[in-house]
Image 1 (cartoon, helix red, strand yellow):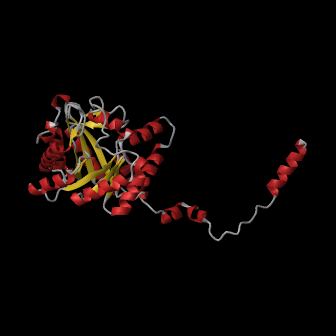
Image 2 (tube, helix red, strand yellow):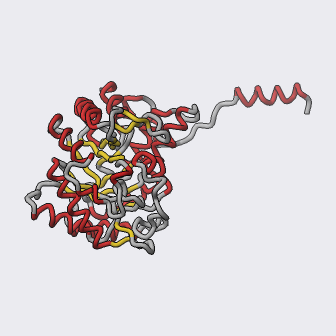
Image 3 (cartoon, rainbow, N blue to C red):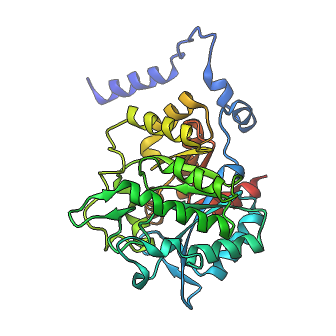
Length: 349
């Protein structure tokens, strides 16, 4: 066929009438304009869905950047109070602080976790005094406090002692409750710790202190930047697969959640978040309890680093990722994006 014939054929095709499809239903009608898309939107992200994790550090510096988490700093107690005040202005319901503990204070059994004047307790007390209306959700686990980086007491042959660890966690939970924590969030994955902590809190007169259980916490590769932030990446001996969950398992997560609810958990959490949206949905559909997810440090770092490299639209990816949690049935999300998202939502209101 000649070039002229090809051009004539192409021109004829362009001028030919498009076939008329006999469609009663056209889903694109509801997508045609912003007002319509807003009306039919199934899930909506709000500031009420956000919990902001903060990293704490002692010393003269008010802030110390976390190299593997661009835009995230470790904060002094005074700076954490200022950020709590900012969170309250933005309407963020709760904070979740985590400490970088001076290595000189770490030992094999995490003794500093029980110290009523440790960094966490001082920060909790200062935040609640300055901003009493904001919720403070405190992690209960020994990894920031142990010299070996594990969440429990480690034997010489490398075993984690479950019951001995739970006893320490109960004393840690009481120290945090006395400092003013509104909610204890055990993240250690020891068997029986929810019931033991609930009994300890009730027995000490802290019956109103809630428990948000890290009920389905997986032995994940996505925790690396967090371990940098709290200083356990270099000290961790071995791995945590004897107590954190196998990423291949789904039914096991439901067993863990069921047990924690029976032991007195008020809320449950899935960690990490985006790689485990199926677990979030199964938990919510099965139990109908308040269900949360942690958009962990590795998830944050991937989005933020890709955005800074120009590979993705960071703001759109941030909102899309958080909306995915809502679509999976989560009632809220722990996310390092919390203040940025809250600011965006406020500006759009």
